[in-house]
Image 1: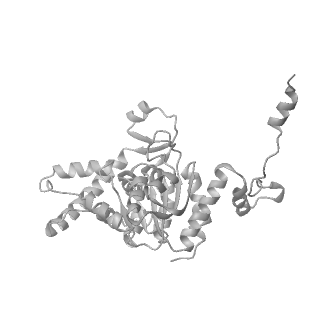
Image 2: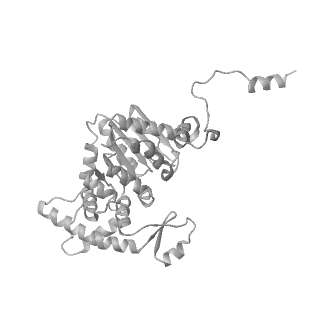
Image 3: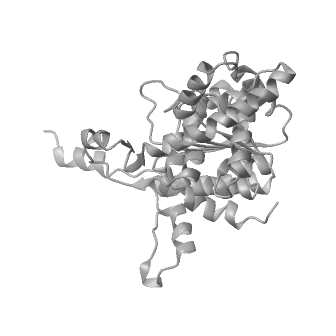
Length: 333
């Protein structure tokens, strides 16, 4: 007769080997509120808290080893208060290159012309449309901001076009970003500091969003029909900028074309040494957006001996904490 109890116990309660590693333990609030210690406790908390702590350690290695740091972020990040974090990094020369989308450029400039307003995810699209208010998640942008942006940007495009007609060369997206930063002349701007500190800003999707609309309208004006922006040359410049680096680190917030552009550029140096991703994308559909750092290793975008971490979560919460624990503690360059 089968001894079912014995078999069940053998299967459920069988002895195994002890795993190596730290004990899982969170913060003890009996010790009071100590924010540095709370962050330190993330290392043994588990789940994304421990991923966050490893990301912090990787960024610190980038800083300590004086790696060339490529920071990528989507336009929605600039829509949010992360814009001020990026501005800080550019102002204090904490990163070497910035890669974003057309929206990630224009929204920084637009914020110099008028504030974005905290709204509601559940606001009626129909009602907002009737009031000429655009919604980015729970952030409201009155259409008047874009009218001011048009008034600002068209003369800048004209000046840049006149400069380049003399040389016969097309405009580069990175040149346009610097020119916008120079002309806005506002210390709240990411790109004012990027221009001032000569931090390259690459924008592979310069025609995306309102900035692309302005370029579209600009080309209709007499004398501007031959205005050309050379994305290919700037892509070459981004790719070339990785070759020969002693150490290279990438920090990518969000995904899409920004993520792919930075990682693809690192193919040309056989991969980045350090990589930190923050996004919520999954890899089940095979997209680059959800691809893990280990997939990037298979392509040569991250080195086989490189160190990397993907943290699943909202960058508006996680990135300010990472900056507080790393860049903001580092001495000025």
